Length: 141
Image (cartoon, rainbow, N blue to C red; front, side, top):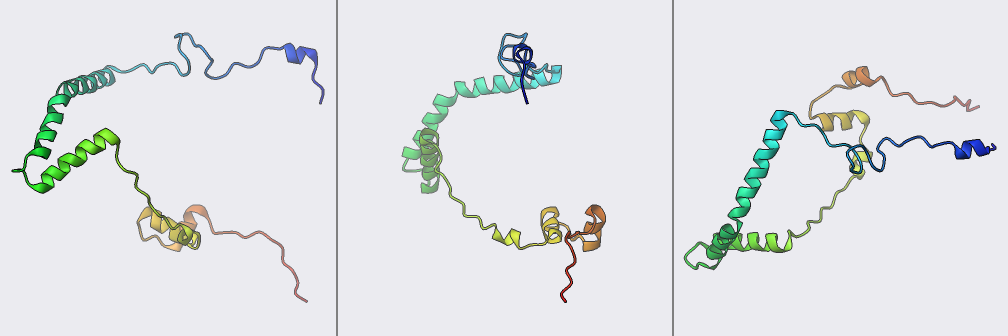
């Protein structure tokens, strides 16, 4: 395959999202919100702003609960855990998953497991058709 100079000099197809669009920003143009979506977004923003105003007071309340010896130990421990998780992040949780059992299951068993319903083999085959194995018959003689 040979490429001509005209092909090299030809302008390239524009990408779906160009480096700079008509809005002067990179990437996808901003979504135009409906009035309902705009009100919902504003309400969430106002709620976040109001909650941030009380965050210092809330933090001091948690500290007071943690330090108060008259409060039940389980509540003090919960307060301490809240402070630690907000300050240092929650600890990672490792999960061991054994997936080889799914490899041994038939398609029908997997469909029953995923759907959570007791579906017969006939119903499964009616939807996707019977399983077909391709190959050639070999005479054993």
